[in-house]
Amino acid sequence: MFGQVGFFNKFASKAYEVKRPRDRYATESAWLLGVLDERHAGRDWVMGADYSLADISPLGWVRRLTRRLRRFLHVQARLNRGLARPAV
Image 1: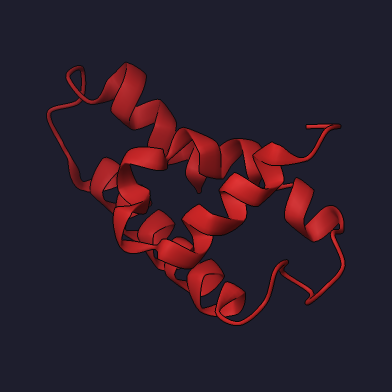
Image 2: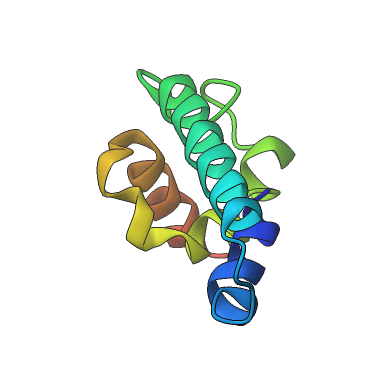
C-alpha cells in the first residue's frame, strides 16, 4: 500500500484525471499507519520488547511517509528508534 500511494503522489497524481485510485491507496495507507500506531502504544517494537523483522520491513516505507505521520505519534517514535539503530 505504501509503495502504491508513493507512486501516485510522486509520479502519477498529475497524469491521472481520475483521483479515485490515488485516494484509495492514501486512505488504506492511513488506515495501516493507524494499526501500527495502536500496536506501538505501550511497546518499543511491533512484537514488544524485541527488535525483529516485523520492525525492519516497514521502516523504509514508513520513512517515506513522514509528512503523514504527524498524527501517528507512536509510529513516529518507533521510526526514530529504528533509524537510530547502528545497522540502519
